[in-house]
Image 1: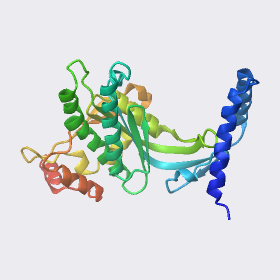
Image 2: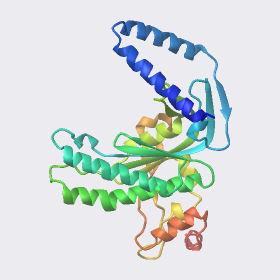
Image 3: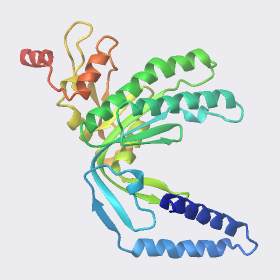
Image 4: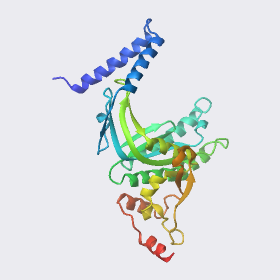
Amino acid sequence: MSDPSSEFNLASFKEAVRLSEAAKSSSFSISAALAEQQEEASTDITSAVEIEDVEKFPSLSDLYLEKRKWLRIRNVVAVSTDLKDSTALNFDKYAQTSARLYQAVTGSVVRLFSLFDPQFIAIQGDGAFALFHGELAFERAFCAAASIKKFSLASIGPLIDEKFSDSFPDSGLKTGIASGILVAKKVGVRGTNEPIWAGKPVNFASKCAQGADRHELIVTSAVYEKLAPNDYIDYSCGCPNGVPYPLWGEIEVEKLGKHSNCMRLGSNWCETHGDEFCRAILDGKKTREDVVRTAAAA
């Protein structure tokens, strides 16, 4: 009895080979190929599509390729991070340096994302993005982003200063968080298809990251509204004098247009209380007695 997945993989391989061989053929015509794609695009843009609302974040196998059907997921939280001054990654003149830094950054970012149970991770250029959905999605996304921020400040920045020449630019990770509705589908051809996550979360998170400086985290106002009621996220631990203070400040991200009012995190995981606070956030805790007392005394 044949394995259906094997048959699908064979079909995918044959389709990829067919397209490749067509391009090598002496009868290949780019004009004809462009005309064919114009017809395909016209069909796609004028044909009705089906949009199905899903409660659970879909697996890649759930996404459609050839069928005009998109899955819509609400309340998705996207975290995007990339490297400041990435143009310094010169794979010609400084191939060794650039390759080592690229691996150190992207590898570590993916591993840090993975600690907080994201539903999807993708490497994007010299950075990456992760999607969070479901229980404690905002909290998990925040902990991931705050951890990347701390890693950038405490590890990547000092390692660049120590290992690379003085001419290498000051660099580090810039991180952003946004949330909202995504629609998902696979695009491409069999064997060479990729998932796309269309909507504001990934786009806005990327723009927040672009608006940040190295070692900074910026979130949209909508994300901050979800995070602010949590005393472990909104206030410091109280170090060094035992009095907690607000951690966030306003910042404008012009690329977000009418949504440009954002918030920037002004601190990092505390060396003394970071583990405790991260665990509390992931456990769903929100209220701190020291913050309540400080607010009452104000």
